[in-house]
Length: 94
Image 1 (spheres, one colour):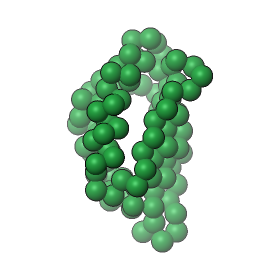
Image 2: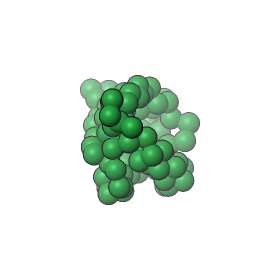
Image 3: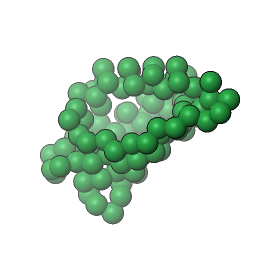
Image 4: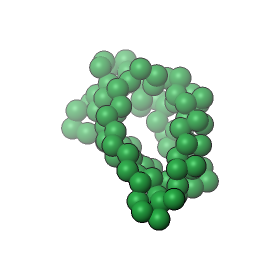
């Protein structure tokens, strides 16, 4: 199993969605970076106030799946449900 890399964008449709991202993001970043197997996690605003650039790296697919499960059940998951995610996910060769 190789490292899992995710890159892409989080795309809000409204100022309200963007406010939800801004409010929930600091805790989401902190919790994700503390997860076992998280090698890198960066979410940065773009030039548009409605779009964020996302870059994630996890040690393997099990760590990435655990992250998705935790994040989906978290305050982040609840506050950002329905926000468009435009991601590319790749796995490095082991």
